Image 1 (cartoon, helix red, strand yellow):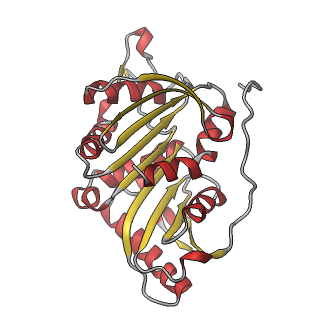
Image 2 (tube, rainbow, N blue to C red):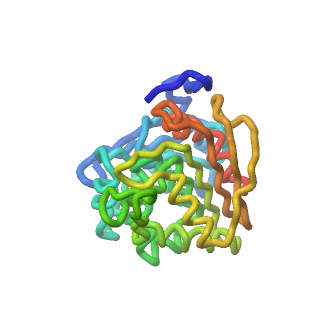
Image 3 (cartoon, rainbow, N blue to C red):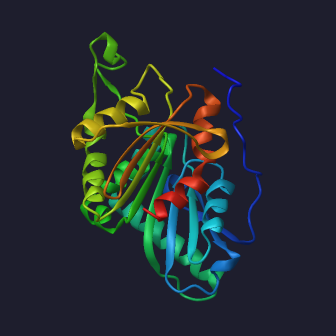
Length: 272
């Protein structure tokens, strides 16, 4: 499905000034590490690990933040399951961080240390974050999470939508409730964005967002304002350092809008 009501503006597919390195990471896939030019003289770094999507988007996002931010981009395979399985063993995430630290150190010409770690998941990429946060040590060490139209789960029974008597498989959602409560208490930062896309075969991000808000005892506030690249925001909920933004759109371009808006969304998360 495609619509032409909104502008769907796109970032130029180019890398900002800086150094890009790579190494073989989880599931044997290449991990891209980007150190913006302005980061060379920073002390401890703010690491942003992005799961799923073209590398130039998170690279531009961290370059705009400036100062001490670097990015690592992980693309594994289509589908949430592939990202989840890649981090089934906690050691996989530890190895990922070690590889990022090694390549960042090589780019900087000195040992790199991470001051904060932010995990960003677009669409199916959220599966990696979901699995990483299930480990208590990793949960404690992650400072912030940004989910871009990617908080999905299945139905019970399989493929039976809510309107036909199905229920959400909440086993994949409880970790988000836990992280959201930590953000509400000021211990983490958590930003969730979603479209109105209804996949049909698995739960929409609107349905999972509604579940999460109900569990947290929060309600949406209707809004009408412009978002990044021509997006139209329709709703918002917030408490402490947790924030959820709902946007119009049920087409493929609306889904990609969420990824393309990462520079603005990441900046918002950083200042929550």
